[in-house]
Image (cartoon, rainbow, N blue to C red):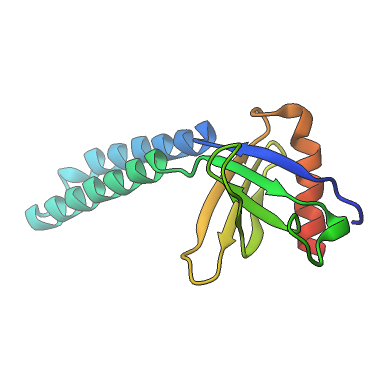
Length: 150
């Protein structure tokens, strides 16, 4: 795709991701309660500990979702320049930080899961939701397709 637009899109806590985590938590707790009486003592306590640790990791994941702005400088200058490619801004007026590679992991039409990987940085997972700025959603999706094709 050529000439994808320059676009900035807000990123924040995704209610969809939090809902998935809560659904998995209810499923795991229900399974644990049903299996508790059939498990030997040590296995039951081990499974309970694993469930608590998973709950902590899920809560940490939901609470520490990245917030900021994802910006695409446009396909016309994707080969260079200050505005080229994808950048991350902690706030609308912050200094942009270039993102290395941006990969679409899951495209659910109104929600997109992205993986970013910068130079020497650990991969970061970002959920984008169409409800944040519906008018810019299609422009964002075009930019994602354009950068994936480049």
